[in-house]
Image 1 (tube, rainbow, N blue to C red):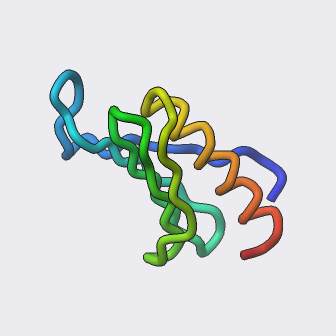
Image 2 (cartoon, rainbow, N blue to C red; image 1 turned 180 degrees about the vertical axis):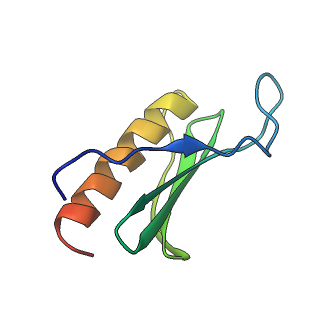
Image 3 (cartoon, rainbow, N blue to C red; image 1 turned 135 degrees about the horizontal axis):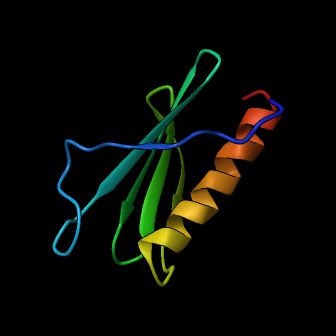
Length: 80
């Protein structure tokens, strides 16, 4: 993979104050990736339907997303 993943927010889920989960999706070749984040700094990375990573104890959903995005990039570079 030579370019960064292009994450798209799932607009079918509620957003803003009170939202419990935000979901972002991306594809890279035949791989479908999803990141779910919670406002309290927890999140999951799923690749092709299999949970590959979990983060918790971050201060914000944005930081959880950043961590999971970096892991997704690494998984994709390693060809997983």
